[in-house]
Image (cartoon, rainbow, N blue to C red; front, side, top):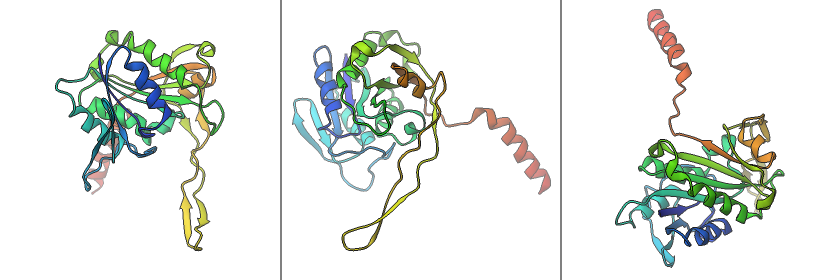
Length: 255
């Protein structure tokens, strides 16, 4: 299997290096990752500055750009198409509303945009804002799924958002198909001053889980399961199409 591996935490992050080493045992892996932490950059592309590909080791490169940049450059390194794109392992969860901001999910989504099945993999702390350590559990989850990915229905449309609880592998209770939950609104912007007395701002932390009931990614991870959420890039609110058409017709009649 030929795999393009990327992330948003940067090429030095432990998650991508643990996964790169494990995948290389049984697959042909090319790793292309940002040269710095790009968490929260979503699907952004670098369009006004040149990109540079820097070789770090055999089949391992860093890029002065975003996760989606990395996927584009990485695909250019293949003579033939890879079998899939994997993004991760992210240090922290990407659940619920997080997927709108996540560079980890964005790299997987870009792989799908360009025609390849994709996985986004994150290691989720079980406490708010906590550090994560059980990367080997996330590696085991990926290796298990890769053994069955060829049988996934409609692989041409596959984007799986995977969140692994930060537990030893023997304590992980299994795999669970989930939907995205949602968070409360983020906390307010934090005002501060730099050393010269000028006002600066920090974006407030993400809100706690709001929709975290049974069936959601939040619920599964807190219960000790690997959450697997099939996602897609179509942002159309299909249920609102008919109501929007009626509203637009009424606007026209009132004009």
